[in-house]
Length: 211
Ligand code: BEZ
Image (tube, rainbow, N blue to C red; front, side, top):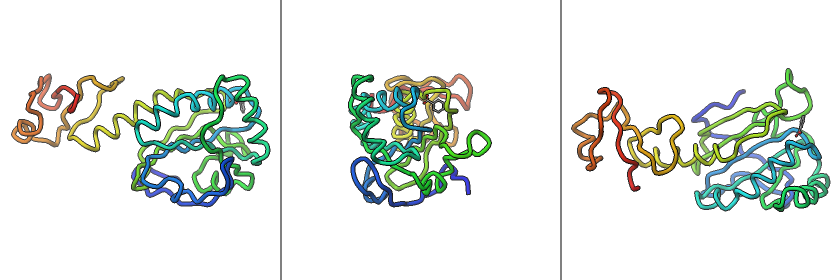
């Protein structure tokens, strides 16, 4: 079954570079970015894990835990971590799931047989503290992901969970946002004391709340 936005994600037990874990217990009250990569000791994956390690403080600031996964064994993960440290000027600082029996990959639909019937694709799952799925991304093996974009989406999710707003194309933290069309002007007057510009009745732009 394909996981869809709003679904409660399944719990699982797994071996990781930081020992055995039960996913829900590990996640606790945090947001989670769970991402798969196709294979250890491959170039694009090596750069991705270095990129995530460098961004870990940014994820932490947003109450987000990160966890990677591939179908390789945990000993392989540890050996590969040495290469990551050597080549990416960043040490692996988050757990990697060793999903050699593909239990988690199958549970989350990370193997797309028509792309590759044994390796995971580059999946991303953003999961909120209620264990609801809030974002999925699927990239091919040949394209490394932009993890800064994932941070940007998390900023948007966390903001729009708190206020009756949505964020426009290419929005960045601190920029103007859009008042959701379901909110009447009457209600908007109470919630957005700084006012708004109405480009259309359905397109009302207001400063980011709290900025
Ligand atoms: C890579 O990470 O470089 C890679 C992995 C699997 C297939 C192609 C590229």
